[in-house]
Length: 209
Image 1 (cartoon, rainbow, N blue to C red):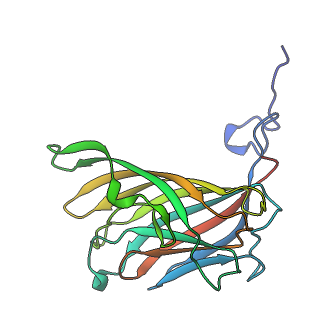
Image 2 (tube, rainbow, N blue to C red; image 1 turned 135 degrees about the vertical axis):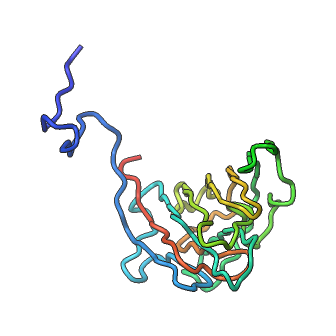
């Protein structure tokens, strides 16, 4: 058995791990500022969403609801096959959660029929409602597989954690597919109501996956 050696003596300074999985390549960061939508469109403003990568990863970080919008806003997404002219790809999804409150007296795990989709062209849920208090937000990530394929449907998975109204922590797991064999070349994120007061969404490509 060979011995793996690192290129630096200090763990803090390691820049490469022999044999490790290929890294994510950062493509674009969008920052919310009272934004109704954040969109990643192939060929627009240095965004690459084509056959360059077989997997794309979107990380949404501390998306905060504008207080004037009120609480209980969920983050949602949709796909486009015409570079953002329409975000209306039909989707079939599953949705389940685990939650626990700060008081420590209410918790559950369950499937949520109200937040799954069955060939619905509307925006799909990635979380449930996030509170509008100053310290409340939603964070998570979504994987989109082989969006440029003209043979297969477009699979995706996501997980999110949101700080909800009444001081609840929710973890959400959403998965499904966009039922199109056309290439998906744009992704848009928004809230179910109100605007994104702050936060970022980062887009990455996964190399050699």
